[in-house]
Length: 387
Image 1: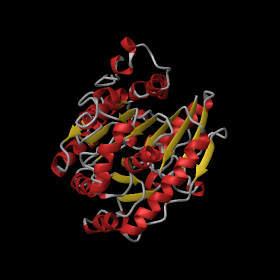
Image 2: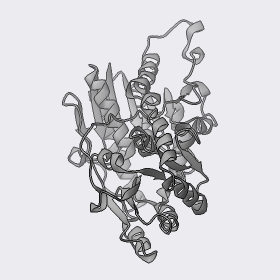
Image 3: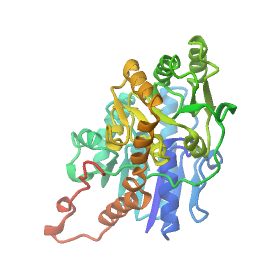
Image 4: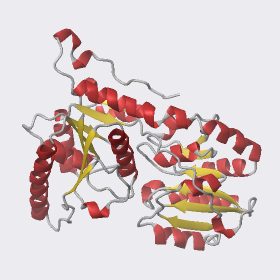
């Protein structure tokens, strides 16, 4: 099959990481892959299979005025249309809302099936009104809209035919058994780990406040946050203000976070909303006990509360600190939860999730069937929970 993947950038983000995994998987299994980005290919963060055709359009220049924005998007549409047409795909898979809209506009009259993929909860991640209107109109052109959780399916079915909406979670990245690391230079320290872009959505400020409350009883613990972003200075200032700057490390962006995760003793996700948090799944795959906010959407689809992790209300520092304190004080409970957490490797395995993608592609590219076997009558992926 000839598959064309489109995303705005191929930098160090969760959506980009999932697209890299999907592209490499399909290329390794003999499919013909093209990956198109609006950004130049020189900015790529994730490695790709050598058989994948890489097209970087270099069209991410900022728009300094509404008129310039219109012009930039007209240029993007023209270049995207040409690049997609030249790739001659059987199907196009697009990631993230604004790129989805541009792809759906640029493929008008090309008669190519387009799959639009939402990568975060659109009920909480707000986009400009004009883009929101275009999304509701143009998503009807997609042969399928893929979301990551049942909660977001409900949002999509509010304006789309339910036969066009599919729930496919993220696959877990293969974990390479690289060496361990010593965090904070002291192998006797116990470590709370967190991971994500340093942005308000992740609520790392709440995590730092919660960790500060725990330190009175757990002075031998440290907090490591893997990731980079615009909140770095504010988070560093907060740690210093709370008097715990020597116990909190903002480690920056890592191409391979698994050595840090395997060294940690506890993982915490403190977000106020998500899409389907890769970091949480990857931490559990490393047999880490996890505490997560029960935010929309994703954590409840991943964590079986009390079985392989603990869920707490979002934006509740006291509840977050309480759950952290309980696990920091109880190594047996950490071991029990971590022993069950690793089951995510099977629940969200690459082979299992990519089979769902393969089934979807087979359906949308199949020759027209007789009326009694139309797409609208095929069963959807309504597995409300992968267990």
